[in-house]
Length: 384
Image: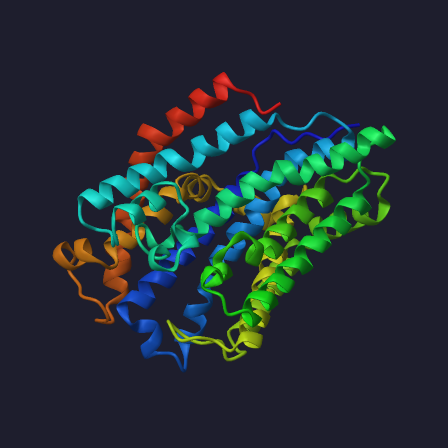
């Protein structure tokens, strides 16, 4: 019997909002100078709040791959590639372009030249060193997301070709082996770019292959959730996660605390490669431990609490918060109009300005532009 993948998981919306808020706290503390000033104490933990990106990648791996995992495991047709790409574009591009052009008009962005701005428009700026942190600086993560969106259908199609020959669905073990290969491949790629001194690879640490491990963990959760009841080991694992949601969250926090105590660099300082690799690994483990209880069918009080309407609403508009918040923290616009200056240590004042302003603009962007476009695309095209 096929499982349903169409219902919306409200708790995952809340987790998306949570990851966005902790990124706002991370950026707020960093730009104010508070993180570096307290590097020997709380600053070391605040700087590790950039784990919000890893959480988001695990969520994305789960949500994007789940329909494909469902089709592969249950032998149903894959989502139509054209419709899938159109829906992904409708979700990402309108809000991003609005923020990019408005902020550029307000002189709130760093733009190297026209060519660099065009790269920002098409979200390929992270592939060139001179443009990597221009435009919307945090949008380097969107370049990874967009790359991931592109490769997922191709990844799934490889298995479809195999199943046509055998005339049977893809086994869960085969998918998990492939995802294990992707996970280990990300570390092999990181080792490779560390050893090779080539200008083209200067920004490769923020390309998709370097973060494929974190996304693969989310894809693994999708396989776990979609696994049939006949996969008894995975069924037991799902039940165990569902019945021990709180323990998984506690373990996630514990692993995150370890990452804050392995001498990773604070601020813009460079971390030794082996420590950076360990920190990246710990981020992935902490993130998948956090996300897993909210992916399975759990009735735990914690999961129900994360479905609270305010939390899910913040998750719904979190994309806009992520896009807009840095404009109020640093750069020309913030220097001219905000009641604080860079490195002044005023974390609370910044947060009380940045978060409400970002929420307000993100809400406007979502309800006026993003949601109408997504609904129009959804009505015109179906995923299957």
